[in-house]
Length: 327
Image (tube, rainbow, N blue to C red; front, side, top):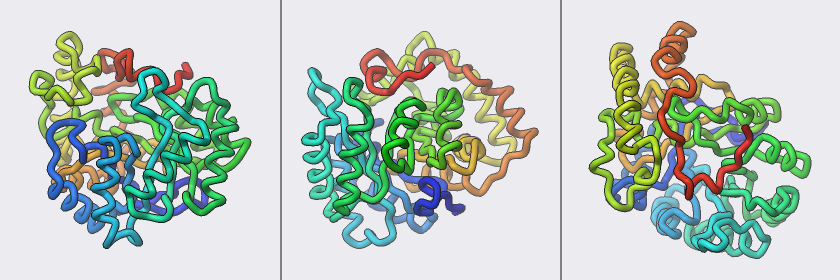
């Protein structure tokens, strides 16, 4: 596994990371033993950066991860997040008190004394990012976190945060399915030596070995509320996705492997963060880090899936409230 830095002069980790949101059934029923086995096999593949959050299963993902960390903490670069609540009246809370409570809760559930990379999961609109950075820097100075990260922020928020202190990474959804970071975040991260952690690089499963069937989504499947999977949009999206899958197989790759390779081709500061509890799927994801795409192949991919090709926005109204808009 090739390695990339978590920010300029930051820790080196595998270019492909492991997201743990799937561990608690976000996209269907989850199995504890399958998840633990996936983590063990990821380390053997060189996938040593594990990403979680306090709201994944209301702490259950962190608790499951703690079981694995008991024997493997020294081999794992650990990330978690804070800033989202389950309070409909105040869905985002970046107050020092809430962030402190969230951090202490994560440390307790994870069974660790520090978190290597700690993200602000969503920026509370009315709270200056400068104030939030001061809180995160206090956590860092106390030794409870290592590096600071931001998630789903606009380029201008990143620039303001950097004026206060170092930011190692920014998480944004980025894939051939969702390319908004190319409108500013990708460039701002590169310019400032910040890692871009591209989550959902396999497009919520659309670049999997088999196309998902929205008719079979369970009631708790996160994709239920995503317009790209609607009865109107999905048939149109599926046509291009089948064409991409055929092209990937013509090259001798799975669609997921090629999708990951494309994400990593966006720059040496970009890392891929797929979420999975399947060792088989993670092996396909990890293979993407071993592929260098030629200019001709990149052009062919762009022809099949040109920027803006997907029908429908990535999020519905409720989920659109958190990510910062910047174009």
